[in-house]
Each structure stands twice: as structure tokens, then as C-alpha cells.
Length: 534
Image (tube, helix red, strand yellow):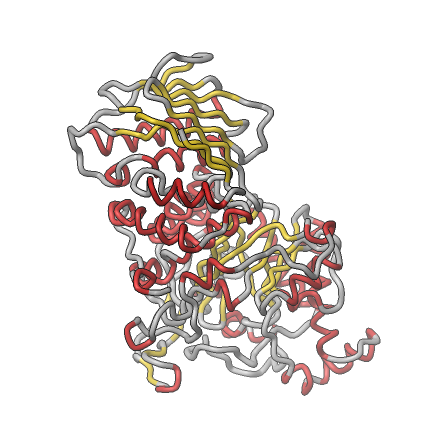
């Protein structure tokens, strides 16, 4: 028997280098004990649930077993069982924690919640032969190496963002994106729904947002500097019923969805349908066709606030999670500088400049969101001017904004572009699909450490998680989206879940290599560049 504590690096590396074909769990568990022998699933296997909270997870496991063997496991309710798979309630565990014990006789999963049991199941599946993720039936027995695992996440927020503003992804594609997140214990899907280049969510009170703002007359093709377009209209949006369907689907995978409605910048598509909300009410706008940041932004008139509050009211009704993302980033101030109304408002409110005017805008929206029992989330630019105590900041311009927010006692999600903007190149641009730029190999993603020396122990508690962002200017298909996301999302998963003391890139890379057959079985279109990188 080998005892593995993730804090003891020598034993930790020795275990996984010698058992890489059996213990390629990603993210790495907090504690694992390798044991001799294996559990074999037999035909008519029984899954016993001691509490109804585990029934959905037992159902997922039975479906996977049936897909691989042709025979579904039988699910029974009982306090315990002497064989098969047993789900036991352990109220002493944390919400997302679990214990997984595999012996030749039975598999025991202990958890306090369905969420914890779901994560235990994901680890169990990764211990099985790769075909557990496929749909080809085989008579070869499914086996699981014996072991004992005690596990819980390092951070409560483990997120992945998909931008559907630049390129639209179907409901089925979004569900596939969510499915893969769940495999690696990611728990937050950030849905970037509005942009200069397209509005993607139905708002019943303002139908022009979908009939006009969701469609651009053409899209850029090739590199940005080529300045070429395809002369083909492009559009798409989600109905509210589709939104509800995706939210419910994600919930079954224990994934919360955070919607993002950009303001006051990144709003050119909105202004195309409702130009009265801009600084120049007689201007004729069109949905942006070029990538980049638009000068056309919302004007902080009362009718603008009424409009955005109406929009957010419908959005908040669709998403039961606690956070509403309002963007708040990259808002050019040129139009405000030349607007008589904006300049008068600055004087009336006693503001210093246009930057403080943006802070006024954000605070107004923050107050509205908070009054409806939700919490505001925005990119780190929202820090300027002050926020309500329960607003959360997403730090994308490096770590500086995150540090400042934590020092001001705001919860923070670290999402630094130089580590987790996964639309960046992950290998030599000459060998890779066209991307926005940057240099972000798998090793660099994995190297990010959110334990920041600038923060005191109390301030550090406000770092609640990590997120990677997939911006889609150059990503128009699900196949390419997966290529840019994987395996870098595995680094995100491990950095946000596993203990700091266990971090070891060589070991992680070894486990990823061992996990590739499982990714092949899931038909993930992943990038292989990391295999030849240091």
C-alpha cells in the first residue's frame, strides 16, 4: 500500500509516475491512498442510495455503465449495502467534499450533498477505462483500481466563460460545453450574452434587441489587419425558453450560470435598435462588424437606466444564481466628453471627470441589482468610484484589480488575461489556427498561483476562485472552441481545485497524457502542442 498526501511531494510524484495508467484524476484529489486490487462491475450491478439527494447522481452513473456495457445498473434505496456502489450521507463533510473508497468488494461514496457525490462520481469515472466516456458497448468488464480518496476544492468558484456575442453557439453546443466542464469539477458557467457585434438574449419588452441587434451585416475574416469581410449577414439569439432549458440542464450538472449584460460600453448592437440611449440620439448605428472596442456607448440618461433596469429584471428572472455580470469594462469616454448632457451631468453631480461618470453609472446599476436580492459582478474597471459591499470583482487586467478589490473587502474572481485568456495562442502561431494573439501554453496556465503575497490572511479570503475566458472573435465553431479550451481548462480545474502544495507541472502533464484516451472517448478536439513543450 502507498499512502499519498498531496503535501508530501516526493511520495506524491512517486505514486503517480508508477501508476499513471490507473490514477489519472484531474483535478488532483486532496488525498489519495493507492491500494492493491480492483473492483469489477458485473452484469446487473447494484447502486444503493441511502438518501434521495444522491438519486440523480446514481442515475448518471447507471447511464454511463449502460453506455459502456449495454446493461444499466440497478438503483436501490437502502441505508447501506455489502456490495456494488453505495452512496452514504456524511453530514460532517463540506458542501463540495466527498470520500471515495474502492475495494474489490464494493465502492463507497460519502458526501453531504448531491454536489459532493457528483464530484466523487467524476473521480470514479476517471479511474475507469476510457470507454466509460464513449458509447461503444463491450463485454470486457469495467474495473476500478482500489483506492481511498478524501477530497474537497481549494476554491468555491471554478469558472469558464464562453463569449457568444462575437460568434453564436447553438443550445446543443452550449450544453456540450457545460458537459465537459462538469467532468473536471468546474462549477460556474459565465455566459457572455451581449456585445458590440451581437445581442444574444430575448428581452420581451424590447423585441428589437433580437430582430435588429442580434444580426450584423457581415463579419471579419482572416487577421484583423487584413481588414477583410465576408459580406454575409450573421446572427442568432436564445429565446427565454431556451435560456431556461440551459439553466435547468446546467443545474443538473451542479453548474451555476452567470449571465453577462454589458454596459455602458460594448453596447453598439443595443444602440442599433435603440439609438435614443446613446449620446447622439439622431445617430444611425449599425451592429459592429469589426472586432475591437467601439466608441458607441450608453449615455447615462434616466431613460437609459429605465431601459437597462427593465432588461435586467427579465434577465434576473431567468437566472436563479446570485450574481449578475454587468461588464463595465473598456468604455471609451470620447462621446461623453463631447456630450452636452454628460458634461452638464458631471457638473450637476459634482464629479471630477468622465471616469467618475462611469462610476456613477455602475453604482446606479449596482443599487438596482442589490435591491432585487442579487449581487453585481463586473470586470475590474468597476472598482473605480466605489461599490456596494456585496459586489464581486473579476480581475482580468492581470492581478492588480483583484488585489485592490480584496483589500477593499470585495470578493474576487481571478481571471488574469496573461494566464487565463484561452483565446490566446497556445503554441507557435505558424502551426496553430488564427487567434487574437498572446502566448499562453498549458504550462503557463498551470503556473498561476492565486495565493498573493500582497494580501493579508483576512484579505486573501476574498479570493473566491479562478476563471478562464474564451473570447470568440476568431472562434466560430464548437470544434475550434474545444481546441482552444482543452487541455488548458484542465489546468484551470486543477489550480482552482487542488491544494497549492501539490502543484507540480511535470506530474500534471503526465496525468494529462494518461487521460488523453478518455478525452478521445469523449471526442474532445484538444490541442496536442503541450506534448512537445517543456
